[in-house]
Image (cartoon, rainbow, N blue to C red; front, side):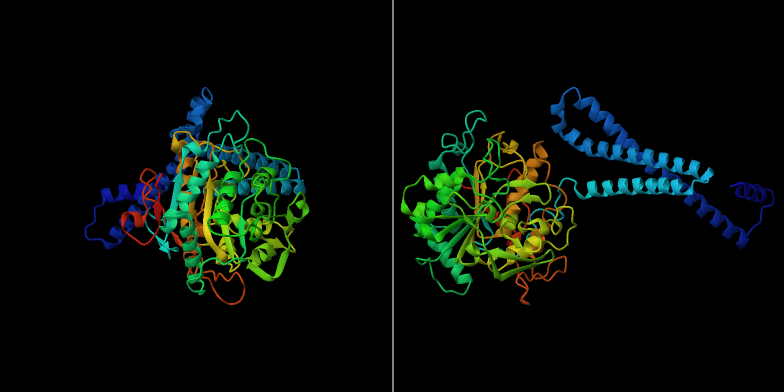
Length: 546
């Protein structure tokens, strides 16, 4: 900079015209000045981020400490991650500085081994701070990567892409004080029956339950190349339920598990409307126990059909009328986590119903129909009847356009290939997989009180995600819909040419999957319109005759 000033002074004393060298020198000096100015601006911007973090922390503490409920306010939900990031940054900066100073002192005293340990510690603190920041970035509140009403994939069903949503607030009456939410006095069976009936009719466009079930079976068989055939006596049906939080120790009043009333209503429909014998119905979760609230609800009906329904559970909990799952090694499921096998109660059936739950998930963002089959896998070298090996292959922390195990799982011919109906039990959703049931702010702080049905797995999960991500924005009890929970929906919708470039071949027979359904996000949480509702595309159609 001193040299530049002298040059400037010299040129003022001895002006020279048309000197190309001088012009070039002036241009160089100008560029250097611009570069230095830009660097200075960049340095100032760098310090702006910790300043914002400090202000956010102070604002959060001043507002929330006197009144903790303010933590749910939109401004505080915005300030919280900035404040948290600032705290992590300060801890990392102070910790690494102290370790480095200690190392310098040890070097002066020729204690090189000890100095090396502190230098290593300083580096690890910096690395850890950056890693935490990266994890926070990858698990921020979910925001779709594509605009609303931008469908991808191929819609499935009699009415392609149709998802039916039935809500009846009078079906759920629990006041959190008397009994448990699944008690008969707190959940109205007759209203749940009406919800299931209406949802099946609306899904198929039929005016009676029996004709609706017949339409479902005929459509499924036609798509499988079996002609216009309905259900035939003796054909078996498996119903997959999500018992993830069942540990065989009894249900606590707040626990989030499948509604016994929904399951009862479904099997009542199959027996009395579709003509399925109870002995041909299996309710299962091969990795968990099926607790008494569900078992006793079904067995409370003394009709022989209800008494003959089978309950298949994890082998180590097979007692009191429950049957232990056995693996069928003739039907492998090939995934990047290794080869798994499916229960015989699935491979021996003709049809399947996927009855999932509506809730967030701490690892996968959401747990809906696709993840429901985590209770269907047996890993001979990975712990038996457990989905644990799959946990590293589909996390919400993984980026968009990456491999996702849920596509293999639901594309398998014995799972998604047999599923003719997808359902989501949303009477009493939980905050996340290990959390208590929660009311929904979107419905004036009332229970969700809903049933969703579809013939399209990707479509129904897309609608479920939209409900959950919207609720998270206004409900402080739900916080796990983060990162990229819709990556599997993109991969499944475009399974023939997925963004990840993966060849999804769940049977390992050289035949790659085709599209598993259609995905898109609604236009807004008030209108809840998809492209078929708006007449703008061939995506999802959400029907809600509530």
